[in-house]
Image (cartoon, rainbow, N blue to C red; front, side):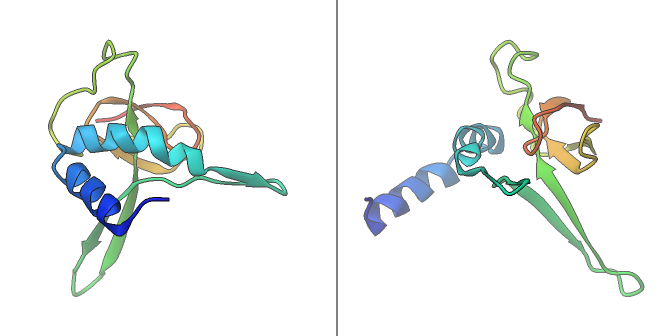
Length: 115
């Protein structure tokens, strides 16, 4: 079991990473919390949430953060440009975002081509 100080140290280390490296660390950890039972599958994912505060039509935009396709990028993480690539997963039709144009849906694992 870890102490509060251990978790604080880890949080500080994670906060010091560039976004693409943080996403890569979480890509390795979050799938470990996937649960399947009674025909349901629950996956812990990272999401990017934007609140559009429009007086006429306020809305909440939620995109799952897709993991860069490490094979396509020869083991690398893609460009270090923040989460500016967007698209939809072709299999589960969820909106995704990534720092990379080639990525994998964090829910189903399908390859996604983002723009």
